[in-house]
Length: 391
Image (cartoon, rainbow, N blue to C red; front, side):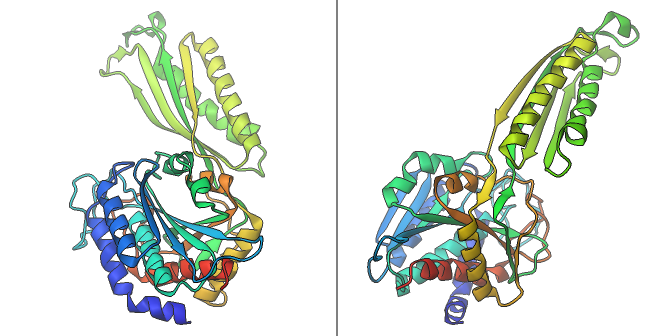
């Protein structure tokens, strides 16, 4: 496969970019060094246009094919990579490990960025397509909705994007393999903060107090009945209360307690139902316990829904790159969230997973992107453009 062979020649350079980015992780929208690095590379490659500051710190490169697209078909295909890291102390021990205390690339966005840079280099070199390829480097995927920010800044309209594609590494999948599914592929994520106000008192006289710890405990248990009894057992939902904060002493019933958690769902109907039941259960526990309970329920990223036609195309392209039997189509959806969902609401496209081998999981301090995956991910990007915009 000539694309794979050619990209293999400069895989060491892409690896060096990846490790440079890994050593200098940045968070959320504060990816200034990374964005400067990306923009400089795109200009060096000879992109026809390089724009910065889209979605605050996003970078976009425009690459024109050797001839304009013809007819009424697809004319502009966008490829997206995320740039931000996580507030985690790295434990890989790698020679290129993070130089910034408390920050690391624990989800592989350094690899995503490097692979898309590699694709941009190849596409500007060959221009073996008709129309335009748009390479999108996004900030703040990790909780900041950078995809929405770039869309709000006119990403789709300015570049006339017809289709958009995303990719993410996947720990536990063999290097050189791909996986994806049509329809709901990753979950919507919502945020739940619950404030409980009781009446503090002495631990030896609970009858003279209203115990917010007891109310909070009852609430945590009751919320699990939503998934086990209110939800259709054939549909997926997750409710996880991950923080319970109350009190400072062993012999004092505190005045207040706070519960903080997350909700994951795969359909709008399930999302609405879970929110409704969370509020109803909280009100019921408040009546039962005598405590005041306030629920702050905030919608986060939407469900990531792959478009059927584009999913089939992505699977076919991945098969050309990886070989027969190395693409899994129709995998179960994941309950993790991804803000590329916003981009798939704006334009048709698909989100694919790339094998990262036997690595630590996402967001683990020992996670590291597998550089052996670079040639496959970069080749997929290139072949996708050439397939959707044939010259």
